[in-house]
Image (cartoon, rainbow, N blue to C red):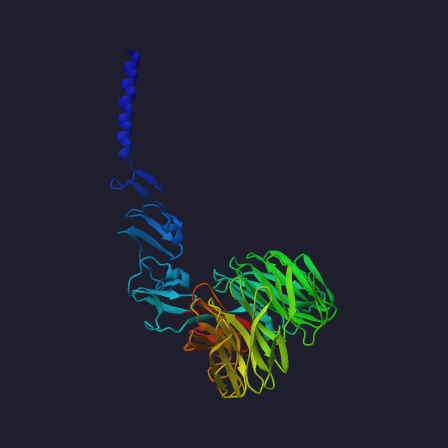
Length: 545
């Protein structure tokens, strides 16, 4: 009986406590009872209530948000309320810096549920953007305007020679620059930036006599970066060193996306040897070109002496040499198609041979384009030009095996059935060939002075992008986009005073086009002005289509 009374007492007391708790009020800070209309009251004279601080991506990962939920969005720098199925900022404050939102381009593109007329200031491309119901446009552009937006930054190295500055872009938009000196008077280095110009890491290559040049680089689909160049005496790649066999030797190096050394190879002999160009195929085989004056070793392979000394070589993904052979002309560009064919371009004089195919120049120097199998067999070789000095500087190949080349020519130059005539000392040319080496079209561009194409790249739709030097009144650096039929889609010129030269162009996996080069005094890219107090300085420009 006693147990029954105890049970009833505990049961009644519990029910009373539960009922009281359900109606309880809580006060944090201050003294006295909480306001009778509030479940929770916070009181303080010198502290605030801190909402959960989340990025936009963290906010979007909240499972099942309900109306009335509050957070502070650190991406947008505003307090947000969840209501009617979406998040809205609660006011913008009185400071002019709070409105419109000041975000990077990527942050603007990620804004949820924008409505027509919304405004945001783009800190990447330095323009006020408005949402037209379809996309975010800079206010100076109208719907349908296909010209690119541009921003730019200076790199961490001074300019010493145009051949020393090359660019490669990984699928995620990371930008790699090799900025070793072209006149071989200092250390070389490799730098990685994000697509907004923030420096991620630098790898310095130094040696006893500061005679190191990184000439070219390429990246694979995982962001591993490969570089070729030359060194004298010795070269230090972090804790790993190379010693020259005599004169200058060639190095080929691979780093992963974090800048960690993966492998390092050396090639050359007792005379001067140079590595100039590099390309990586889809299977991560590496192809290089360069000059070897005498007998040169490439791993277990030997390259015999030859007049001119130009060569191409293939390494597998582990850095082991597969084959090496002489080429007939001075190679200035190299490209690969997937895991298949290898293409080279350059200039030659007199008569030269590519395998069993002879080419003869009409006079001066002419352009050559040659195609090889992945095993080094020559499939075809073509020449183009006229009776004066014509130079090819760069080559690119699309997914269908069509090749695009650029360079400069004087007087008249013939590409297949198309003859071009220069307007000045030299003009830039762009030419396209099909998979069998048949000329499809050729275009020229230039004024009354000297104009030249430095580099060419092709996107997945077969559009070609060419950078180089054009001497116009508005500026000297030129970037032009051609469609697959050779029609100009847009052309951009950098402004400012002094000299501006584009040395290389590369494409991201999206719609961005990156170029690098050097400038003197100042250079203007859209709303971005770069200034240097040195003799020359290296830039990177990003064009968003």
